[in-house]
Length: 432
Image 1: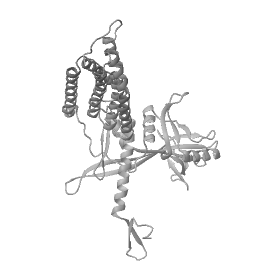
Image 2: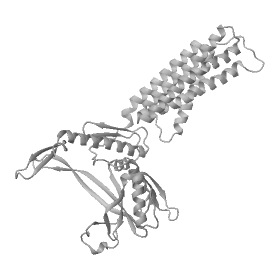
Image 3: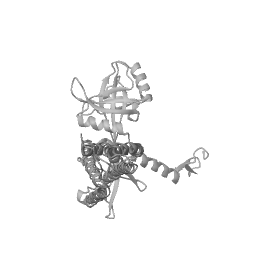
Image 4: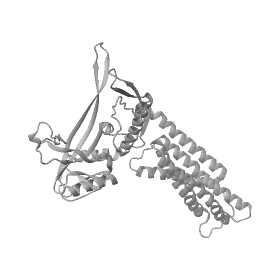
């Protein structure tokens, strides 16, 4: 036994015929670590389903998880979603038994109440599939009745079990059982007059729906009988996000006003304005007329970035987002510098002003594309692998790269062509 169960410590009982087995400290820590990490992943999935801009879900210490939801509108709804441990089970109805006839369930069955009252339902103990085998769940509406429903998609194993069961039980009733584990913190004063806390856990189970199997089905079906669209939406969200590995309790909730972050936001905008101003001054002094053209394109670049961000649902401009914009300002200027230096080199080699402009843009194009495409790939990787603020930085960086290439190549070229390439005009010198 010691060889096969190394995670247990063992000692003989007082009677000599019993063996007491206890998990080792290391095994307990491993189970706790797994449960906390699994819960962090599930909470992150639920937060993402809420559509909050740049949330933060991170582990703190041995057994705590910190969740930050900037700009959340309905804190009560978010609290309910984060704390719920709910799942579904699909079971066959033991239709040979009547729930009114038994105070206790017959062998191999269980009695459950119906949602909203009514006669109890006697169900088989063995479930067909559970919520863990649901790969997708979307709220919808019944086209005939207009009532809310949840459209379910099962994984391969769940689909096979559902298909076998429905083939063998056409014409028989099947029930959808809702199971929710609840935990509440109860505060009390002990015999010594000190305040104490304890967690009270309970399980709520009731039948959502009972329907007769009309024909065999497998991976796709729908759940009806829900009270409201809000209930259907919550149930679909919980099924999509996955269950929690262990019950959680909210031990502290804090609402932070915007004034606490005002200094950081103000400092971020000041840094962006200062950096932008220094860049504009440098370009105007060093590249003269062409520098002013680049400055116009740079301001246009910022306007386009902000416009695109305003069109993205749920997008918020945070400090990492501002950092991404500042970085793209530098990259946009870098593209202009490459073009203008190539134009200078072409003028020194004896080309005419118009030929120098054409050659400058052509020669710098490859370098600009190579640099920006590689940075775009990095931004995509950051968005795919990161979360929260990292994704916000990646989004603004990617958008900024796209707009900076457009303004640096197309925008400045159009202005230069308008100034120096108008019909009938042959410039003898360039202001660069």
